[in-house]
Length: 456
Image (tube, rainbow, N blue to C red; front, side, top):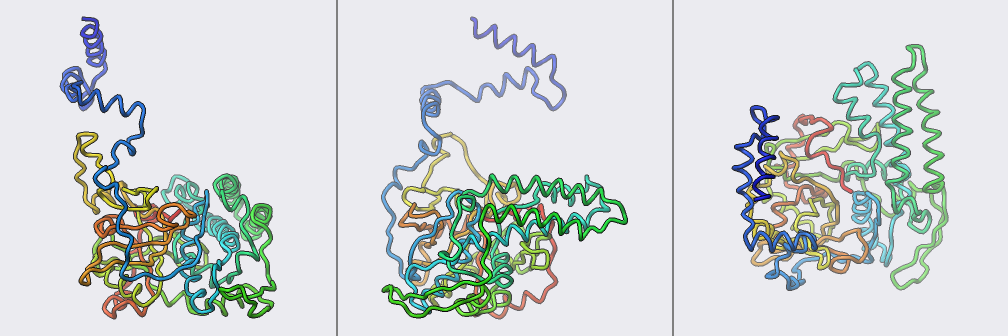
């Protein structure tokens, strides 16, 4: 009886405030029938009060370890770890380059310094923001472009295009020459401080008088940012001595390099023109080239530009690259149906429908359009398992240390279809008809487009 009285009082209260389109007493009474309170509902409620939904939804029928044999796999040495930072794009890009360098020079467990390039990434992004504020200072602050700039003054996410621009401009150094710092391993706190400094600098640039020397003001602002970066990450070397050793730790040579000289010797190819980024985004027309405004790392660099293709064409090139021994920059929505302990991405890993008694009906296109899915993490694609020429599963080298399957993640081909978004290929693996698409004038998309999700 007490329950009935309370419900009646609630209905009266709702009735008093409900408007057309709101929840009135009649609607509340109807939708309250959704919870039956039967034995099944009570059991699930009890479970959800003590155990995370992801644990409860784990599919016991898929608990066995997946077959780890791969018909084609690129050999890699060592596992990298981005730790608590959003630098997966940088680790992945440099992992692609280091795989080639290790193979060419028999280097053993060798790494390029992520910290070195990240220093310049943050400096360049600070300049990109400040210059963009100067460029848009005549627009009202409520303008969506200006609002977006102040909402995103600096980030630690990125894409392969940023890797190419930064490496081409600043070169590379070995990890031991410019090692990781505590701030590099946990970037969010200092990034937040620099972001707020940039925001107030941006306001100062907008408020400056017409006779103000905005470039001189920007230079002073960048001096402050540079100092903070040196305090956080160290002073980047302009020249260094390095001893090259082979995989057996035998000394090969000792030389003095600048970062660009080291790049020329150990990378050596044209990152700006040797690679093509492709996307599988069913929310947009295939066969078209798209560009994202302000999605770049340097003001004088390149926006993220990609060719949108059906998944079948993407797979053809991925298989060719793996068979050719060339690892690829790969990005996806890694958090979906990932079993982190086993290192497996499989759409059957979790059964939320049976647990919650609901149906999830959105396809890949609908997930993109509604922000339910997008590219969130970059890794290095190194393997495919083929059966009669048809891919069964894929393997990526991750940058989360030794977690997952020996520092790697195995993805079923069905998962690949649903949650893979970007791959970067050397041109030699890209058919002429796809290369010809790049002659199109790119379709410019705004910085706030749903597919602007810098990999972290």
